[in-house]
Length: 67
Image (tube, rainbow, N blue to C red; front, side):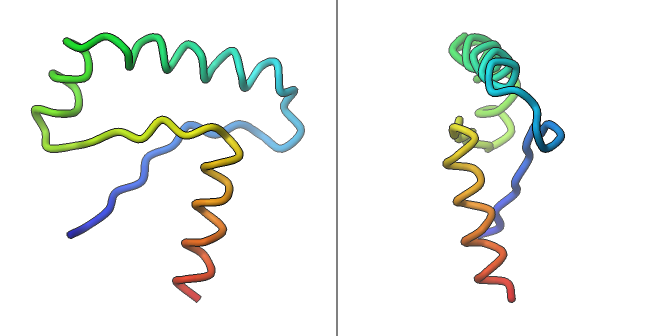
């Protein structure tokens, strides 16, 4: 099974208030069932809405695995 990672990132040092506002907006959109169905599920994709810290940890583990 192939894993595809798509992320929205911000420059280092971006204030947490800004990244949190963007994350909450993404979660609000992703919470709409019709949006999820049309944009993700109908294409066989299953989104994971990680926090920035969870995504950082995921990336660090993947980098270590790939090394």
